[in-house]
Image 1: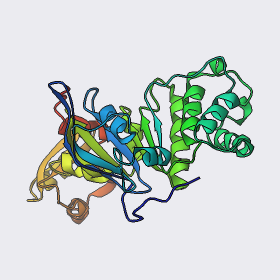
Image 2: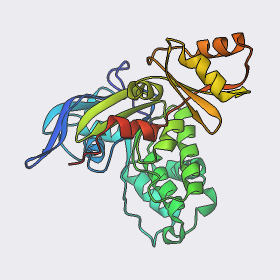
Image 3: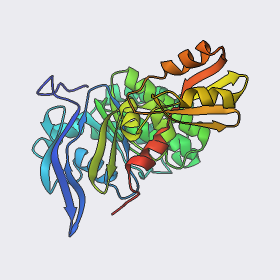
Amino acid sequence: MSHAPADPAAPAVQTHDLTRTFGAMEALTSLNLTVNRGDLFGFIGSNGAGKTTTLRILATFLTPSGGRAEILGHDVVRDADRVRHLIGYMPDFFGVYKDMEVTEYLDFFGACYKIPAAQREKTVGDVLELVGLSEKKGSLIGALSRGMQQRLGLARVLIHDPALLLLDEPASGLDPRARIEMMAILQELQRMGKTIIISSHILSELQSLCNRCAIIERGRLIYSGPIKGVKAAASDARAFWVRVDGSSEAARELLVQRPETAGVEIVDGRLKVTLSGAEGDGGYIADTLVRAGTRLLELREDEIGLEEVFLRVTKGETQ
Protein backbone atom coordinates (compact mmCIF):
# COMPACT_ATOMS: atom_id res chain seq x y z
CA MET A 1 0.00 0.00 0.00
CA SER A 2 2.99 2.37 0.32
CA HIS A 3 3.14 5.03 -2.40
CA ALA A 4 6.46 6.01 -3.95
CA PRO A 5 7.01 9.77 -4.02
CA ALA A 6 7.76 11.63 -7.23
CA ASP A 7 11.23 12.55 -6.00
CA PRO A 8 13.00 9.78 -4.08
CA ALA A 9 15.47 12.35 -2.70
CA ALA A 10 12.75 14.67 -1.36
CA PRO A 11 12.57 15.10 2.42
CA ALA A 12 9.47 13.86 4.24
CA VAL A 13 8.32 17.45 4.82
CA GLN A 14 9.56 20.70 3.34
CA THR A 15 7.89 24.07 3.85
CA HIS A 16 8.88 27.25 2.00
CA ASP A 17 7.88 30.56 3.67
CA LEU A 18 4.65 28.92 4.82
CA THR A 19 2.22 31.58 6.01
CA ARG A 20 -1.35 31.41 7.28
CA THR A 21 -3.55 34.27 8.40
CA PHE A 22 -6.97 34.21 10.06
CA GLY A 23 -8.40 37.67 9.44
CA ALA A 24 -5.91 40.15 10.89
CA MET A 25 -4.09 37.48 12.90
CA GLU A 26 -1.02 35.81 11.41
CA ALA A 27 -0.94 32.27 12.79
CA LEU A 28 2.15 31.28 10.75
CA THR A 29 4.84 33.60 9.44
CA SER A 30 7.27 32.44 6.72
CA LEU A 31 7.82 29.01 8.25
CA ASN A 32 10.74 27.14 6.68
CA LEU A 33 10.81 23.63 8.08
CA THR A 34 12.51 20.42 6.93
CA VAL A 35 11.72 16.98 8.33
CA ASN A 36 13.93 14.17 7.03
CA ARG A 37 12.69 10.71 6.24
CA GLY A 38 12.85 8.42 9.25
CA ASP A 39 12.83 11.30 11.76
CA LEU A 40 10.87 11.12 14.96
CA PHE A 41 10.41 14.87 15.00
CA GLY A 42 9.21 16.85 18.02
CA PHE A 43 7.16 19.96 17.24
CA ILE A 44 7.26 22.16 20.33
CA GLY A 45 5.36 25.32 21.16
CA SER A 46 2.94 26.92 23.60
CA ASN A 47 -0.80 26.83 22.98
CA GLY A 48 -1.50 29.25 20.13
CA ALA A 49 2.06 29.07 18.78
CA GLY A 50 0.95 27.66 15.41
CA LYS A 51 1.61 23.92 15.80
CA THR A 52 -1.92 22.73 14.99
CA THR A 53 -2.21 25.20 12.12
CA THR A 54 1.00 23.80 10.60
CA LEU A 55 -0.12 20.19 10.99
CA ARG A 56 -3.54 20.94 9.49
CA ILE A 57 -1.91 22.53 6.44
CA LEU A 58 0.37 19.49 6.04
CA ALA A 59 -2.70 17.25 6.38
CA THR A 60 -4.44 19.23 3.55
CA PHE A 61 -7.25 20.49 5.82
CA LEU A 62 -6.13 24.14 5.63
CA THR A 63 -4.76 25.98 2.62
CA PRO A 64 -1.77 28.28 3.14
CA SER A 65 -2.25 32.04 2.82
CA GLY A 66 1.27 32.21 1.41
CA GLY A 67 4.25 30.01 0.67
CA ARG A 68 3.96 26.28 0.10
CA ALA A 69 4.46 22.89 1.71
CA GLU A 70 5.50 19.55 0.23
CA ILE A 71 5.09 16.01 1.57
CA LEU A 72 7.61 13.57 0.03
CA GLY A 73 7.91 15.91 -2.95
CA HIS A 74 4.15 16.45 -3.42
CA ASP A 75 2.58 19.90 -3.02
CA VAL A 76 -0.12 19.82 -0.32
CA VAL A 77 -2.43 22.05 -2.38
CA ARG A 78 -1.87 20.88 -5.97
CA ASP A 79 -1.42 17.18 -5.09
CA ALA A 80 -3.77 17.05 -2.10
CA ASP A 81 -5.32 13.67 -3.01
CA ARG A 82 -1.89 12.08 -3.39
CA VAL A 83 -0.71 13.61 -0.11
CA ARG A 84 -3.71 12.18 1.77
CA HIS A 85 -2.60 8.67 0.84
CA LEU A 86 0.93 9.36 2.11
CA ILE A 87 -0.02 10.71 5.53
CA GLY A 88 -1.84 9.63 8.67
CA TYR A 89 -3.17 12.62 10.62
CA MET A 90 -4.30 12.29 14.22
CA PRO A 91 -5.77 15.54 15.61
CA ASP A 92 -5.60 16.38 19.30
CA PHE A 93 -9.32 15.68 19.64
CA PHE A 94 -10.96 13.19 17.34
CA GLY A 95 -14.46 11.75 17.37
CA VAL A 96 -14.98 8.06 18.02
CA TYR A 97 -18.22 6.21 17.49
CA LYS A 98 -18.76 4.80 20.97
CA ASP A 99 -21.45 2.32 19.95
CA MET A 100 -19.27 0.73 17.26
CA GLU A 101 -17.04 -2.26 17.81
CA VAL A 102 -13.29 -1.74 17.44
CA THR A 103 -12.98 -3.91 14.30
CA GLU A 104 -16.13 -2.39 12.77
CA TYR A 105 -14.67 1.12 13.23
CA LEU A 106 -11.34 0.22 11.60
CA ASP A 107 -13.04 -1.74 8.81
CA PHE A 108 -15.07 1.39 7.98
CA PHE A 109 -11.91 3.50 7.60
CA GLY A 110 -10.23 0.72 5.60
CA ALA A 111 -13.16 0.88 3.18
CA CYS A 112 -12.79 4.66 2.96
CA TYR A 113 -9.22 4.10 1.75
CA LYS A 114 -10.53 1.55 -0.78
CA ILE A 115 -8.69 -1.39 0.80
CA PRO A 116 -10.31 -4.49 -0.76
CA ALA A 117 -12.74 -6.31 1.56
CA ALA A 118 -10.72 -9.53 1.39
CA GLN A 119 -7.61 -7.69 2.59
CA ARG A 120 -9.25 -5.52 5.25
CA GLU A 121 -9.61 -8.18 7.95
CA LYS A 122 -5.86 -8.90 7.91
CA THR A 123 -5.01 -5.19 7.78
CA VAL A 124 -7.27 -4.44 10.76
CA GLY A 125 -5.73 -7.34 12.70
CA ASP A 126 -2.22 -6.14 11.88
CA VAL A 127 -2.75 -2.54 13.06
CA LEU A 128 -4.51 -3.70 16.23
CA GLU A 129 -1.55 -5.93 17.03
CA LEU A 130 0.82 -3.03 16.38
CA VAL A 131 -0.94 -0.76 18.89
CA GLY A 132 -1.50 -3.55 21.43
CA LEU A 133 -5.28 -3.82 21.12
CA SER A 134 -5.67 -7.31 19.64
CA GLU A 135 -7.59 -8.54 22.68
CA LYS A 136 -10.12 -5.68 22.29
CA LYS A 137 -11.26 -6.61 18.75
CA GLY A 138 -14.89 -7.19 19.71
CA SER A 139 -15.15 -4.47 22.36
CA LEU A 140 -17.36 -1.42 22.05
CA ILE A 141 -15.29 1.73 21.68
CA GLY A 142 -17.23 3.41 24.51
CA ALA A 143 -15.97 0.72 26.92
CA LEU A 144 -12.29 1.46 26.20
CA SER A 145 -10.13 3.57 28.50
CA ARG A 146 -8.86 6.96 27.31
CA GLY A 147 -5.42 5.44 26.62
CA MET A 148 -6.93 2.62 24.56
CA GLN A 149 -9.06 5.08 22.59
CA GLN A 150 -5.91 7.05 21.76
CA ARG A 151 -4.22 3.85 20.57
CA LEU A 152 -7.30 3.05 18.50
CA GLY A 153 -6.98 6.53 16.95
CA LEU A 154 -3.40 5.68 16.07
CA ALA A 155 -4.53 2.35 14.56
CA ARG A 156 -7.02 4.30 12.43
CA VAL A 157 -4.32 6.53 10.92
CA LEU A 158 -2.14 3.47 10.22
CA ILE A 159 -4.83 1.54 8.34
CA HIS A 160 -3.60 2.62 4.86
CA ASP A 161 0.12 2.22 5.73
CA PRO A 162 1.11 5.91 5.44
CA ALA A 163 4.77 6.93 5.15
CA LEU A 164 4.31 10.02 7.36
CA LEU A 165 2.39 10.34 10.64
CA LEU A 166 1.23 13.77 11.83
CA LEU A 167 0.28 13.42 15.50
CA ASP A 168 -1.13 16.45 17.33
CA GLU A 169 -0.70 15.95 21.11
CA PRO A 170 -1.16 12.15 20.95
CA ALA A 171 -0.48 11.72 24.68
CA SER A 172 -2.93 14.45 25.71
CA GLY A 173 -4.91 13.51 28.79
CA LEU A 174 -3.23 10.13 29.25
CA ASP A 175 -2.04 8.78 32.59
CA PRO A 176 1.72 8.08 32.94
CA ARG A 177 1.46 4.37 32.05
CA ALA A 178 -0.67 5.06 28.96
CA ARG A 179 1.80 7.76 27.86
CA ILE A 180 4.75 5.37 28.19
CA GLU A 181 2.86 2.75 26.15
CA MET A 182 2.06 5.33 23.44
CA MET A 183 5.70 6.46 23.24
CA ALA A 184 6.89 2.84 22.93
CA ILE A 185 4.50 2.32 19.99
CA LEU A 186 5.87 5.46 18.29
CA GLN A 187 9.45 4.22 18.68
CA GLU A 188 8.46 0.89 17.12
CA LEU A 189 6.81 2.73 14.19
CA GLN A 190 10.02 4.71 13.64
CA ARG A 191 12.00 1.45 13.61
CA MET A 192 9.60 0.23 10.91
CA GLY A 193 10.63 3.19 8.75
CA LYS A 194 7.79 5.63 9.41
CA THR A 195 8.50 9.34 9.64
CA ILE A 196 6.65 10.84 12.61
CA ILE A 197 5.94 14.44 13.58
CA ILE A 198 4.62 14.71 17.11
CA SER A 199 3.51 17.94 18.73
CA SER A 200 3.48 17.83 22.49
CA HIS A 201 3.75 19.81 25.70
CA ILE A 202 5.32 16.83 27.51
CA LEU A 203 8.81 18.02 26.71
CA SER A 204 10.69 15.60 28.95
CA GLU A 205 9.29 12.69 26.93
CA LEU A 206 10.10 14.31 23.59
CA GLN A 207 13.67 14.72 24.82
CA SER A 208 14.19 10.95 25.06
CA LEU A 209 11.86 10.07 22.16
CA CYS A 210 12.81 12.37 19.29
CA ASN A 211 16.03 12.69 17.30
CA ARG A 212 15.18 16.14 15.92
CA CYS A 213 12.83 18.93 16.92
CA ALA A 214 11.54 22.38 16.07
CA ILE A 215 10.48 25.13 18.45
CA ILE A 216 7.81 27.54 17.24
CA GLU A 217 6.49 30.68 18.94
CA ARG A 218 3.84 33.07 17.70
CA GLY A 219 3.95 31.41 14.29
CA ARG A 220 7.70 31.85 13.85
CA LEU A 221 10.36 29.17 13.85
CA ILE A 222 12.88 29.72 16.65
CA TYR A 223 14.92 26.53 16.27
CA SER A 224 14.99 23.46 14.05
CA GLY A 225 17.60 20.71 14.22
CA PRO A 226 18.93 17.91 16.44
CA ILE A 227 17.67 17.67 20.02
CA LYS A 228 21.25 18.03 21.27
CA GLY A 229 21.76 21.14 19.17
CA VAL A 230 18.88 23.00 20.77
CA LYS A 231 20.47 22.51 24.17
CA ALA A 232 23.74 23.99 22.94
CA ALA A 233 21.89 26.91 21.36
CA ALA A 234 20.13 27.69 24.64
CA SER A 235 23.17 27.35 26.86
CA ASP A 236 25.58 30.27 27.09
CA ALA A 237 28.25 28.14 28.75
CA ARG A 238 28.87 24.54 29.76
CA ALA A 239 28.80 23.55 33.41
CA PHE A 240 30.06 20.46 35.24
CA TRP A 241 29.16 18.87 38.56
CA VAL A 242 32.17 17.81 40.65
CA ARG A 243 32.38 15.78 43.86
CA VAL A 244 35.67 15.28 45.70
CA ASP A 245 36.89 13.17 48.61
CA GLY A 246 37.92 15.96 50.93
CA SER A 247 37.32 19.68 51.24
CA SER A 248 34.95 21.12 48.62
CA GLU A 249 36.14 24.62 49.56
CA ALA A 250 39.79 23.69 48.87
CA ALA A 251 38.78 22.24 45.49
CA ARG A 252 36.84 25.42 44.73
CA GLU A 253 39.92 27.55 45.46
CA LEU A 254 41.96 25.46 43.00
CA LEU A 255 39.40 25.72 40.21
CA VAL A 256 38.53 29.43 40.44
CA GLN A 257 42.17 30.28 39.69
CA ARG A 258 41.99 28.64 36.27
CA PRO A 259 41.26 30.94 33.28
CA GLU A 260 38.85 28.33 31.85
CA THR A 261 36.58 28.77 34.89
CA ALA A 262 33.84 31.40 34.88
CA GLY A 263 32.58 30.51 38.36
CA VAL A 264 32.29 27.79 41.00
CA GLU A 265 29.47 27.36 43.51
CA ILE A 266 29.07 24.71 46.18
CA VAL A 267 25.64 23.04 46.22
CA ASP A 268 24.95 20.33 48.83
CA GLY A 269 28.63 19.47 49.09
CA ARG A 270 29.17 19.26 45.32
CA LEU A 271 30.78 21.88 43.12
CA LYS A 272 29.05 23.32 40.08
CA VAL A 273 31.82 24.60 37.80
CA THR A 274 30.73 26.94 35.00
CA LEU A 275 33.15 27.26 32.09
CA SER A 276 34.10 30.51 30.41
CA GLY A 277 32.46 29.58 27.09
CA ALA A 278 30.08 27.10 25.48
CA GLU A 279 32.98 25.50 23.59
CA GLY A 280 35.08 24.81 26.70
CA ASP A 281 36.32 21.36 27.64
CA GLY A 282 35.89 20.17 31.23
CA GLY A 283 38.97 17.93 31.10
CA TYR A 284 41.07 20.57 32.88
CA ILE A 285 38.91 20.15 36.01
CA ALA A 286 40.07 16.56 36.60
CA ASP A 287 43.64 17.48 35.67
CA THR A 288 43.75 20.40 38.14
CA LEU A 289 42.33 18.44 41.06
CA VAL A 290 44.35 15.24 40.54
CA ARG A 291 47.62 17.20 40.19
CA ALA A 292 46.87 18.82 43.56
CA GLY A 293 46.41 15.39 45.14
CA THR A 294 42.60 15.65 45.40
CA ARG A 295 40.65 12.42 44.88
CA LEU A 296 37.86 12.92 42.34
CA LEU A 297 34.62 11.01 43.03
CA GLU A 298 32.37 12.48 40.33
CA LEU A 299 32.71 14.62 37.22
CA ARG A 300 29.74 14.98 34.89
CA GLU A 301 28.37 17.63 32.61
CA ASP A 302 25.28 19.53 33.71
CA GLU A 303 22.59 18.51 31.23
CA ILE A 304 19.82 21.04 30.80
CA GLY A 305 16.49 19.43 29.99
CA LEU A 306 14.25 20.27 27.05
CA GLU A 307 11.79 22.09 29.31
CA GLU A 308 14.58 24.40 30.53
CA VAL A 309 15.67 24.93 26.92
CA PHE A 310 12.11 25.79 25.92
CA LEU A 311 11.81 28.38 28.70
CA ARG A 312 15.15 29.94 27.75
CA VAL A 313 14.55 30.25 24.01
CA THR A 314 10.91 31.33 24.10
CA LYS A 315 9.38 34.40 25.68
CA GLY A 316 6.14 32.67 26.66
CA GLU A 317 4.23 34.64 24.05
CA THR A 318 1.08 33.36 22.36
CA GLN A 319 -1.24 34.86 19.82
